Amino acid sequence: MSYTEEVGERLRRVRVDQGLSLQDVERRSEGRWKAAVVGSYERGDRNISATRLLELAEFYGVAPSAILPGESAAPSRSSVGVVIDLERLEQLGDRFAPLRRYLETIQLQRGDFNRRVLSVRGEDLRALAVLHDSSPGQLVDELRSLGVSAPGTELAG
Image (cartoon, rainbow, N blue to C red; front, side, top):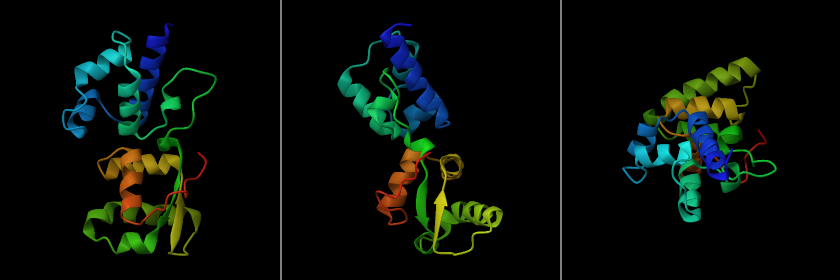
């Protein structure tokens, strides 16, 4: 497999792991990333510049090393968990009601009822992102910006 094909395969894997179609990428990026162009990168039909690779990695919310071939890729943010401040999430209103219900289910399964914070694993984070119509990276960024999850509270995946 050529280097370009390997980069493309990794790009595809990151996108698919986040539950995104090529059309989803175009829509969520508001046309910045055209489905045809991203598809050509993924197939290895088109070389991606270092600048564009960094920008696409940022869009996906992953480290560039998750895309670049090498010894081992760093875990993507979608494979990492976060600590969520349940009290702060409650204050944010109805927009986050589906997330709160899902988190309550996790608490029931774990028998964890401290009601203040909850550690959410990567798999659950991906499910939460689907409920919130975002990627895991976008959800983590939004939760951070709203004070629901602080930087540095990521958990190993």
